[in-house]
Length: 240
Image 1 (cartoon, rainbow, N blue to C red):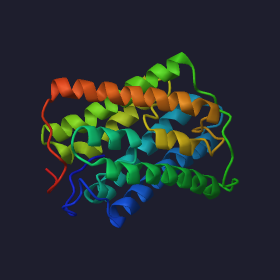
Image 2: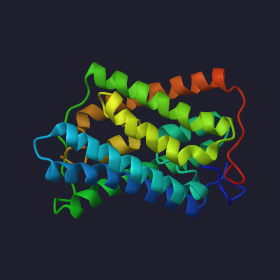
Image 3: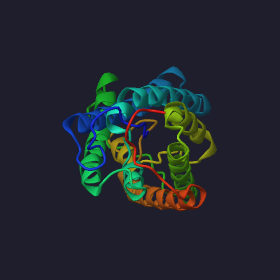
Image 4: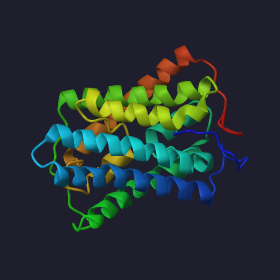
């Protein structure tokens, strides 16, 4: 997420069609990767939850690396309302951009979930029954989201934005295992995963609490960044 853009000098103020399309496609692919690999993991490794999680995490990390490379130079590769809001608060985007990006990300993730279901001969929509809103899950989402914000914006603040694809992919892959929630860290993907009653799904009743925990984690990440990296430059120009 948050590669510097190679084009669109108005990146920080007015979203273009190309940027919104990039956020939609990237969010859709992210959801399709997470959910599709979860379905495949269940198929290939029935009865072995640990191996299923490993397969799901590996596919997600690899896919995330690729889609950041594809869409980062166009939109910044947010795919995540928390990342977009953090970018606004850090001075990289305007709220006008955020109000266009965020619904695009949510719709993209819901679309990707339906696409994943269809690719595995399932109904386009199957509401998940996987409840995740325990105190441990919510604490994990705070930690996962704060860590994601730190990874992304510390690279930006230290002029290492070109490392974002591998850094973010590595962090998310690791967070699948060190957090009990398997690191959603993204309200848009939480909404999308409601629409698939599979390994990677989440029950609708768990989503509000997850979203609240993610918002809290995002704020914690921003506060830590303000201490660790007190200055910030808008994301414009060539990748470092």
